[in-house]
Length: 317
Image (tube, rainbow, N blue to C red):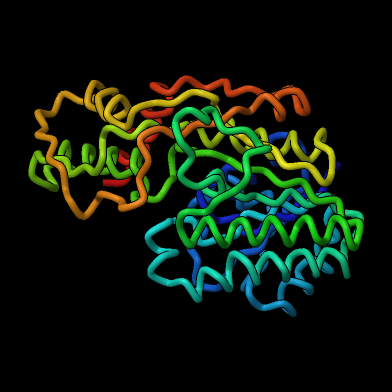
C-alpha cells in the first residue's frame, strides 16, 4: 500500500485527491493549517489522518513529514485565487514560495526517497499570443500576475532540489479545473451558487458575471486528481507536465449550459468589479507529453461536471 502525504488536503483539489487515493487503496495523510474547515473531507474522515501544520512554519512541516514517512508527497497547499494573491503579496510569498521550500527541505531531511508531486499552474505561461496556442511545456514562462510569479518560483525550487539534492520532483501545471466544492471565487462555482440562490428565493433573479468572451481550458477536478496520482506512478522525476483538456470553452458557453439546467428566469448582468485587468481572450494547453507519460486523458464531460457543481450548491443554499 502506498502512503501519501497531501499538503492543503482540506482544499478543493486536496479533498478530491484524498478521496481518489482512498478509493485506490492508498493510505492517506495530510496537513492543513489551524482553523481551516475540514468539511470537504467529510466522506473520508474515518479513513485518513490530518495533522495541523502551518506550511510557512518549517519546524511544523518537518515534524509532519517525519511522522508521516510518506512514499509520495503531493504539494497542493497554496494561495490560489489571483486577486487574493495580488492583495496579499507577502502572505502569498510565504505560502507559495517559503511553504514550498519548507516542504522540499522537510522531504530532504525526513523523506528523501519520497516522490514529490509539486503542483504549479498554467498561469506561469502568462499572456501568450493566440498563435502560440495550445501552450506546451517548452514555452518560456512569463508570469503576468503575482500568483503566477510565486508558482514559477516554487517550480524553480523544485528543480533546484532535484538537481542539487536528487529529490525526485515532478512538476505539474494544471489549467483551469472545476467541480463540486470549489470556492465561489471561481467562475463556474460563482455562476452555480448564484443560480441555486435564485432558485431558492435567496437573491433577486439577476446573475452577475465578468468577462464571458474569454475562452479557457476547463477540466473536471476529478480527472485532474486522477492525473496527480498517475503522475506519482508513471512520470519521470525532473520533468514538467501540463495537465488539461487540450480544448478551450468560452465562459459564456459554460454559463449557457448552467442556465439550461434551471427553469428559473434569470437576467445576466455584467459586473465591472468581476473583470480582470490581465484577462486574455484565449488560453488553453497541450497535454500530449503527460498523455504519453501517464496514459491519461480527461474522461468527464463538461455538462455533467456543471450539473454536479449546480447540485452541490443546491444542497447548500
